[in-house]
Image 1: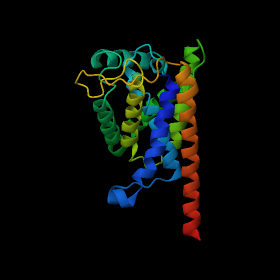
Image 2: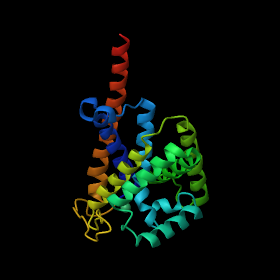
Image 3: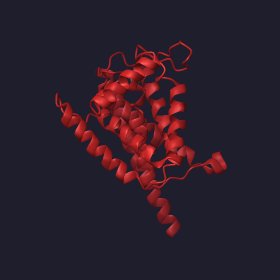
Image 4: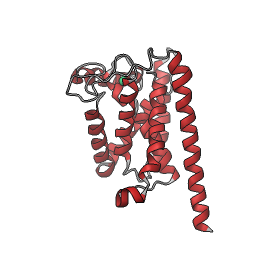
Length: 238
Ligand SMILES: [Zn+2]
């Protein structure tokens, strides 16, 4: 699947999940209520995390995000995880990343900012922030925009970050399951889940069906969430 499709799926899953998670009637004290800024920050984090499972691919799009640093990181992750589309494309990885990022976001602020920088960088690369054949310039542009995003988010309460990361990784796994190669969703079990709805990456189905549906979904849910918040504020004021 294309990076753009993964990033869109992450944002969509987040925007779809938040209204459910804010239901006091369903979740009682566990319900979460986010401000519009937190909602958008969560969507950015979830979209970036939806690229994260591909850190097992040394030649993939995100391997070049921050030049040799990410290239080496992806190479080693690929070796340790058993190759492309192995351990990192599973529920296990999604939950582990979610827990690790939750621990960082709640106990180790600087570590979380560093992780956020990398995750946003991956998301930017995923949606296509790179200049054809100009790697240093692309990496610099990624660094600049990722740093700006971290700066904008550094003051926000991001205690929901671990959840957004896990959801993003899961969205990626589901997306890759729709391709002929599938994923070992229940890794370390070797059995692969394959529902081959998207026959080729960047083919007609992905470009003309999946991508537009995801884009439309993200647009509708963003407008709905922001309008809903404005209405609630207006009603409580009145
Ligand atoms: Zn993948």
